[in-house]
Amino acid sequence: MENKIHILCTRDIDKTLIRNAAEKNIWIDVLPFIATEPIENVEVQQEIENALILSATVAFTSMNAVEAVAGFLLDDQPDWKIYCIGNNTRQLAKKHFGDQSIAGFANDATTLAELIIDESETEELIFFCGNRRRNELPDLLKHKGIAVEEIVVYETTAISNIVKKEYNGILFFSPSAVESFFDVNKVSENTVFFAIGKTTAATIRKFATNKIIVANEPGKENMFEKMLEYFT
Image (cartoon, rainbow, N blue to C red; front, side, top):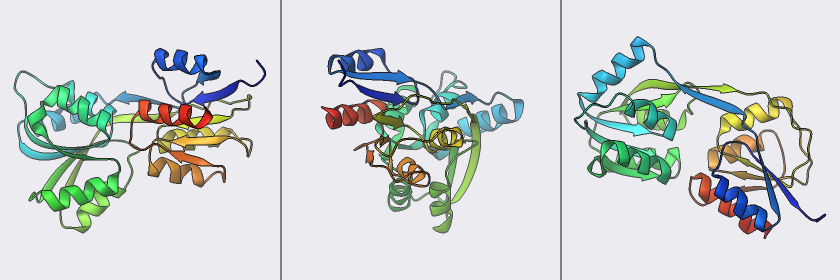
């Protein structure tokens, strides 16, 4: 059919979702623009292991950070109060650290910072993050007098893929992927962007004036459903 909808997904996604989209005449190409790898040097290992024996309040803003830290878990669960961004990150943290450890979650960094400030009596927080982490969470906490110890547990690197095809829609899952994409690509003014959150949407806005649709809550599946809803 000539009226196929062509979508670019900028990270891997479940093949079942791709097949479901094809049944609706929406055809998905998957092409990543960033790669993430856990940092495995001795210094980071020691920082994580020291944190695991503390009674602490910690924050995760990505599943990558949860996986990187969980790789150092032994038999005992740490005595942590965990705050997360996004339901998927929360569920992964719950899987590795236990349901009892989850103190709260929010859909963006600003809301999460406000939750920690309002609910927690802590004066110090450990923030497990990547090398390209955003400033919102640590800056807001520090402004309220909460000391933030950042432990960088994974690295994000750009992948310079050049896109020659024109797409009806493009799905972005992080500000880093947006920046990597626009480093080497331009798009038609008719392309609709789908952003996993407000921060990703704001980054898209730096490069384009196209329509942007933001997922109701962070998560690959939620944003994918938003795209299907829009085009069907």
